[in-house]
Length: 220
Image (cartoon, rainbow, N blue to C red; front, side, top):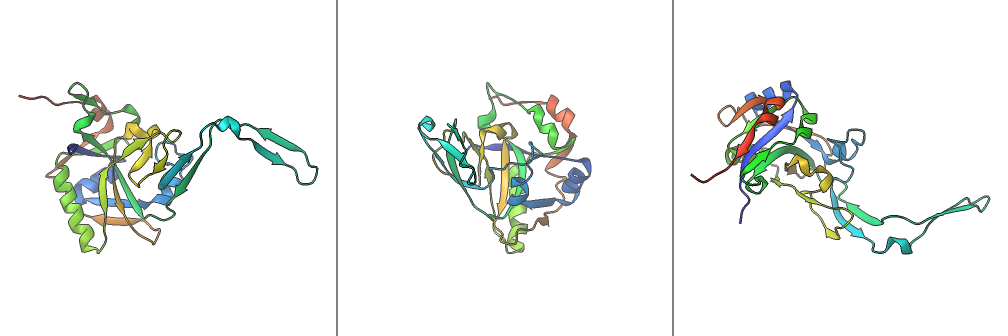
């Protein structure tokens, strides 16, 4: 059963939200950009583009040893956890939004996580995600590009074993309820596209106001 998306939300500074509303300007940065934003813990994610994880059971059976090759002195340590991760080194470009899905409603209610205000003091609330995706697809095809777009799935990196996709992130970021647009691209440079005014399918709100809103779903 499809998990219906009711709203898409983009948080940013006011000038960028106005540009998105008026011109449909979408700036897709590279995956590398997000991987290297380690000092910005809400926007960066060093685990981006991880395509497989292997967790080793019983880490107490392993020892990490560091040896000074000149003196022979060594330091031994038993690790708490051990895992290997494999990355897609140049998967392309990425645009991140927040989505509100049917499954996000608990007892018929949903509230925006207050931590999302870290992304900016304004937001664009898109009330017709299908039309937004239709316009996006039209422009991407006009530029002879391809894309994928869907909601992110979250995983525990200390428990997961097996393959991952570009639409997986660790549970540390689950509060973002992310919807992402991925454009495969080998140039490793940002892409900016314009899909036209979104005035008919969206509205600009302050992040402060959006945090106060309570989304409800009920049968009438």
